[in-house]
Structure formats: C-alpha cells, structure tokens
Length: 275
Ligand SMILES: [Zn+2]
Ligand SMILES: [Zn+2]
Image (cartoon, rainbow, N blue to C red; front, side):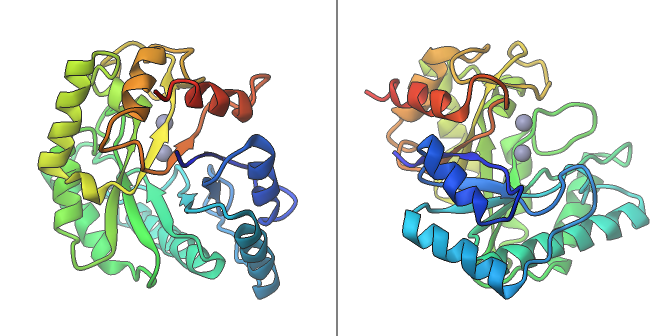
C-alpha cells in the first residue's frame, strides 16, 4: 500500500516531508499557495532543492499539488477563465520546480452556459496551458453540486480524451463518488463503479486516488469530508477500495478533517482494513 495525506507547507515547503513522515505517509499532497486565494508560491532554487532532498531521503512518492478552489476552467466569463488558466499555469510551473509529479484540480462549474459548453471550455483552457514535462494534470471527479462538471465519469473521459495531446489523467475522490451516488459500501455496486470507470476513463488513466469518508448521505452531491470509516461510506466501503485488485496499488491520499483525530489515526485505521 502507498498511502499518505494532504499536509501543510507552513514554515517552508520542505516541512511537508517531515510532517508526512511523522504521520506515516509514503506519498502526499500539498497546496502551492493559499487554496482560497489566487496567490501561488514561487519557489526559489534553494527551497526547491530542500524539498527535493528531503523527499528523496524519505522515499515519499508520488506528490500532488492540489489547485486552489477558485479555479474554474468551465466558466463562460472571460475574466475568470483567464485568471483560472493563469493560476493553474503557475501551479503547474511550481510542480515542475519542486519535482512534483501531479497537479489536481476540480474541472469547474458552467454556471448556466450548459454542460457541453462547460466541458468544451475546459478542454480549450487545457489546450492553452503549457503542461511541463514530467508533470501530469489531473481532472478530479466532483460531488456534482449545482452546475459543477465532472460528477459523471463520461464527462471526465471526454475532458481527458480530448486533451490527450497534453499530459492529463484523472483523480478519483471516494467522498465525491459517494456524493455522486456510487454506493462504495455495497460490493456489487462498487465493482460496477470500477468497471464503469474502466470502460470510460480507463483505470490506467487514474494514477492517484483521494480517500475521504463523507459526512453526507449517498447521492447528496455535497462535499464534506469525514474521517475514514467514521462517515456514510464507512469501513465496508473503504475495505472494498483498499482490497480491490485494480486499485490497491494506486497511491492514495487522505484529505480527512484536520482536528483532534489526526492523519496518523486515519492511516492506521485504513491499513487495518487491508485483507
Ligand atoms: Zn479536490
Ligand atoms: Zn472533497
């Protein structure tokens, strides 16, 4: 198993690595800036080499940068669309500087222009980006609230296929899949979900998973993460995920709530479900 968590970069990006070591993670995720603003960190060569050195010493791999929540490549508004592309480009460049393998982002919301137009807008934006060599841009599945895109695997498939000349792939979040109506705790339904994922996106195009339980009921379209096993997906759901032959070897990153129950408890609990 290769599991880790989304860790803080406060005090310096290289601090993420020791935090990951402390919780027992072997892969991980960070923000390259502040997730609710447009500011993206620009790392000096020194900062980057400190991060890379700490990482190679720890053996943690792969790493992911999670894009800010403001990015919306599906928007019909030109100013927001431009800002979003700019921001994502900076995050991709930060990944290249830090030697981070993936940048993941939420595809966005069409806010009334229609799903087709929204998907086309995303595809056009990704074509405008310059994805650095050795960095892969990941479309994340979403809970599906409002006009957000990427709830359906077929939508993710279209985004990924039509940007095939760029370096793109897909990240699947368990909380979002549950919110979108996939019952992970029912082994037949879960098997069907993985088969659907494989026949659309292709399981080989999913290099990273986000593992989060959900505070909300199945199909709620709400995105509220809960501790592993403590939410509506529950132990049965995560047992299905970590023991699935097509998924068990994929890097899994936790984004569980940051409160009294730490990541290490969550990782330990997750590992206890491996059969
Ligand atoms: Zn996400
Ligand atoms: Zn989420």
